[in-house]
Length: 468
Ligand code: NAD
Image 1 (cartoon, helix red, strand yellow):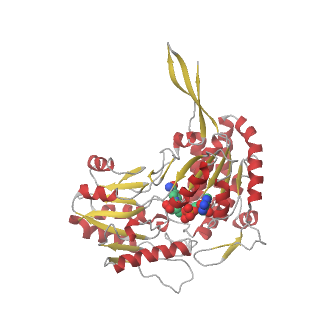
Image 2 (cartoon, rainbow, N blue to C red):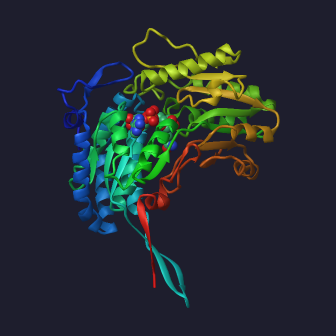
């Protein structure tokens, strides 16, 4: 077991001028060891050297190593959650820091357990053909700041399971959390199979344009995804891109507003809205519009926001000032256009932390920037509709397509609407709920390539067909 102080000691550099700060209090957490392009070169060489022996292990041996890493995460779970809460801002409680660390162990175990056998595709008079999945080599990963540990695990665990080694660059906003997670896993993993290098977008650009990687897996914004795709083209590096979203929820007219309010709330406000697959636009029929708004306001008032380490809180600050300013700008744009602010929208500008209040906005149209852009914070626009086909068209009327949801007690009806939504995942009566067994990925500009499940393992392996 590692303590919080032990973790800090393992991952911080007291001499570094780059300091990670708590977004709730602005207190310094510790110095971040900033890595250079030559550190990157050294890490790639080390990963390349470690890869053949790792690939030579059997699936059972690599699964055992992943299970040991999951044990190590669980043994240090409280220290990891505390560091995550301080650095990312998310509360310990609610679907937040402890939940994220628990997810890291669960996803690691799930990736250890998925079966991946050669598939027999042909076996008849013409002969036999099989498809097998072999390691790619060295995987480079770049990640975001919203779920920094869990998203790192989504990149690391399948890659390791399939016999690759990994070099990962976490977001410059949450480097210590990911360094700590890797330090805990590296207590049990062989040397060189998992390396984390802290740096900014420049190091990310150096990594994603480097010829030393066999695959790049990236989670972040659409614009960075486009830059990475251009950079990877020269080396023909394989890519998985998990990019931004602007998920719509559609409430059907037979839904019970009070019964769905809590699900709608967490669908939109999980991680204080800083979630790629959070609900960012809610479409509600005229007939129950006022009741849905009232139920949401009532639930939202019951959800305390504050410093993450205080156990009563379930919502935290925005992780960084830039994100706070985006949310504030978008809510102001809605207010100026005549939208009704049902709750929030009035931050205390004198505060130290990046707290933006839980905000519900009614009577706003699709063109408003609060609806058209990914707000990525605790603000939800609630839009009216009178015709369901029109609501579906409006939900589909954006360039991205990560997730969507339909809310109705009639599953057949909801299922039919779900089949018309352009998204990688459509949830019914929930939003954003993920499962390590169910492949996750984007439609349209939300990216391509799948994570989770056997599909996620195949995404970090080379298919090899053998025929005789
Ligand atoms: P971002 O694109 O700004 O940064 C992500 C990472 O890319 C960081 O590590 C950054 O240093 C690095 N980077 C920046 N410029 C780069 C470049 N030119 N080349 C290579 N790397 C570079 O995204 P963010 O603000 O950290 O994260 C929020 C975004 O991520 C949102 O759009 C959100 O929807 C998306 N996201 C998507 C998923 C998903 O699974 N689809 C999950 C979480 C977050």
